Every structure is written in structure tokens, then in C-alpha cells.
Length: 493
Image 1: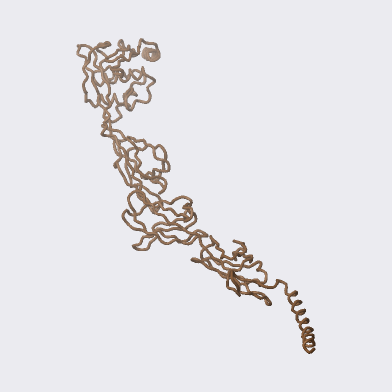
Image 2: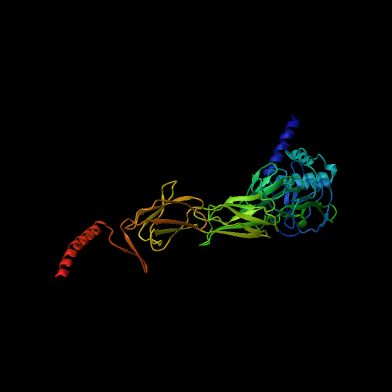
């Protein structure tokens, strides 16, 4: 019964001391500042709350007198692994114990464990405080913190074109350093980080020591050089002891984290050089879509890259700097001649290559069978035999007619719809579009027509209707028939 009463009393005292009001002040003054004391449950002395130059420091000798604000203390490195562990995993440490209820409990537990470690004769004296022993055992189970460095195993890489994925990518890169170390950086838009387990990340990414990855992007997605900026970390932890020169007064301690600037790292990625191919229309210099294009290796005739042109220049990656290649058009867009091959040399950075296409040009001549000259007045059509669609329609003049934009290699029909007066309709003429295609259609003059060849072209006589001509001829013959006898009689007198 007495033991139970004592236990209840200690629990009440513990609850009171962790929730009660104490004279703790806040002061950011430089040097040593004493802010007040937190009572230790079941003990006649307490735990002081101290700061040095604004940072919290911990009392490590609880059976000594507390120093006062402004006291002089001597700062020195204290390379004790056990003290380092308490400061590293204790309150406000790098890997702080996750179950502290707040500043008061964190300060008391960390100070008491430091005191036990600094003065082994105190070991076990505070295990009765609720939660304290769990904290102490948790710290004991942890490793001694070591100098931690996190960085990339490479600082600069060159991207290359990977045919298997049809993208540019880097070689494999590793994150190295102390266990648990991490690096965080932001990727450019359209760039993907691919981890060794095929996990794909974009945007801002965080990697852990041991991760292996590469970066990849479309050949036309990024260019130039990308840098992660300064990332990684290199830091070591040193316990700092504040020795009080006055006899009988407490020593203090804190953990000093030293950032090593030489331990920081960055990764620079030089995206692959590329060839920028423009496929243009010869008349207005705009990009021409629909051409089937290839880049050929002249050494063996192999196709290195193949695509269909769009309204934007096309980027070709993975070509060897200093080597010659051939740009070839396999199929021209409809209405254009296929361009001749273009040989080019790959240089540093961006190599620009241009290929231009001209419209197909078909010249149509409509002539008279009698004069052999251009015959105006015929209504003509060019028809697509596959669809029956009229491609172009016009009326002939005294000049040949030029038709642009017919598909090279395709067959068409030249059809006469209305012949000029006095001419028969000509038969359809089939033709295939090639280089500088010329199509000739001849109209025959109808019988009974008199055509006089004269200056300035063809001079036609008569009328289009033959009946009046026959009538005039008959009347002339009858007049001659009666005129001859009359003439003879006159002569006879």
C-alpha cells in the first residue's frame, strides 16, 4: 500500500511539473543567458534552461550550481561519442526523439541523460520519471552520428540519342554518401528522371543515398546545359562543452553542426547536339508539311533517322560531330517535285540544314490542226481519274496555260468541254506529271471551212453555219448559167 501511494504521488508530481507554470524568461541576448528552471519530479533541484548567443545549451551537471546570465564560460570541442549521441537524438538535435511533449520535457530529459552520461554515478537516478527511460533506451539503440556527405557520383554528364527509346538520355548517375542522406532539385519541363527500378519522376524530386537514375527527354524538348544548382550536403557534428571556470558550477553542452561547403554538389547535363532540318516551300520560304524525309549514312546507306515533315523545323539527334550525312526526300508533299539530296556536315551545337521544294509545273498547249498555233476559246478541264474531280478549269488563249501543284507521278486527264467555233471536240488526253510536263491537245477544223494563213495569226473566212454558204454558191452558179448566153448574143450583133 505504501509503495502504491508513493507511486501515485510521484505520478502527480510528474504531471504537475510538466504542466505547471514556472519562471522561465525569454531573452535573446548574446553570451550566456539563464532563463529559469524546470523542476525535476521527485527531486529538490531542477533543470536550468540556458541559451548561448541565442541557441539553447543544456546543463550536464545537475548536482552543481547553475551559472548566471553573463557568466564567462570556455568553449571547447568535446569528442565524446556518448555525449554526441545524446545531443544528436535529444531535444532540438538533428534526429530528435519523436515523442517529446514539448520544450519543457525535451529540455529536462536531454539534460538528465547528458548528466548521467557526463557523471556515470548518476545512472538510473531518474528512471522513475514517466517516459524518461523510454527516451534513454531509444537513444542507446541509435548509432553514433558520423560525418555525413551526400553528393552525385558524377558532376557533369553528356546526353546522347538513344535509338531504342527515340529520346536523348544521360548515362546512369548515383547518389552517394552517408546512410539516409538526401538531395532535392528541380527538373526542367519535359525532362523525366528514371530511377533504376523504372520509377519516373518529374518536377521537383528528392533522392536518397543509394538511388541510381538517368535523365531523358525528347530530342526537341530541351537543349543547351541544365544544372541542378548546388545541392547535396556535407556536415559533421561536434559536441561543444562550455566549461565554467568557477568551482562548483555546472558545465553546459550543445551540438555544433558544421556545414562543409566543399561537400555540396551539383550535376550539369549537356544535352545532345542536334541537326535542325527545315523543309521549305521555295516560293514563300515557309515550312512545308507532309514530306517523308530520311537522314542517310553515306558509308553504308543505312537510314539513321526518318520522319514526316510538319509546320515546324525538325530536330535530329545522335549524329556524329564532324561526319557527313545525306538528307533525302523519299516522298514529296502533293503538288511538289521531290527535291534533290542535300549533303551536310555535323558541327558543334546546332547544325542547320535546309531543303526546298518547288511546285510541279504542267504546261498545257491547245493548238489548231491547220495552223499549229495556240487556239483560243476552248473550254478545258484537268480531271483526276480516280475521283472524277475537276482539278482545274480554264478557257484557252493565244498563250499556253500553266498548271501548278499537280501530284508528281500521278496520271490526270486533259478534257475539252467546248471547242472553239469551227472545230471538232478533241479526244481526252491522258498524261502523267513529271519534271516540266508538257501536254498537247490539237483541234481539227470542220470540213468546208476555209482558213487563210496571213499576217498576225489565223484569219478565218466564212461563217460557222454551212447552209448560207451553199445558198450563195448555188445563186452564183445560176447567174453564171444565164449570163453566158446573154453575153454571146450581145457579141453576135
